[in-house]
Image (cartoon, rainbow, N blue to C red; front, side, top):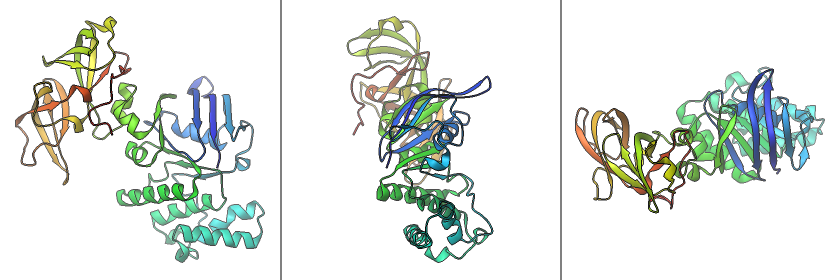
Length: 368
């Protein structure tokens, strides 16, 4: 195992800045996921850790050794990419053995490691097949096996499941999570899919436009986003955002008048400088309920669409001019109806005009 530390790391292509001042520590044995929209710099950051891209500024340390100028082959990393990168003319056995042969490992040791890896990934019966005779999921297992067989200190995964269908993606997520539990290696995983990030990571790094927006556990990012961007990116369906204006600030929080006319006291750290200024209130779809107590926020929703997903139902509509999605409405609901939704102020978030979240005074009602 190894830890990875980035100190002020940056990347530029000429005058175009891709990553800026990245400071991050990945501890021994952590499963860390880089997530963000296309163009956020997540794959570039992973490739710099892997030695496939040169660092423009700052320091990269692996096990307390600066590796900025160390070749990729000497960093003892195992890399798995979106493209399987298997040699089509070689069998599975030969593909697994190839990196060991290049490292001049003895034949007996190669045979042992290949057999152990094949057994671990349950592909003993595939060893004599060639890549064209394998399914997409089987090819990805071979690609992962080729990384495992090198016994690396750190695994790097660059969107490895993007080419698989939904069912196979779920299966491979479970497989990779099991491997992490079994090996205990440090794993760094890149994806644009926030569901993958939420289900697999010990720690998520949210990137946007080449900078880190927030680092934290999946639970923390979901319940305590540092910005409107993180709040909207983490969670599916994404958080609802309702416009309003700050009316008062006091020790219990901030009084906000929503554009729809409702006044709500949100328990966040008060800031009197925001009085009279526009603000955005965030409510997750899961935090709505069909009925309300007197202290709750009540919102009248004009339904557009009802989505039935078996175990859960989502309703989509408008509260005034603002789009809202809510979970848990009655299954018999149909579009073109009008319903009242409610949410507890304790579950709400407030975001300033610059997108930054105001710190809440206590944990949300559903914190566990």
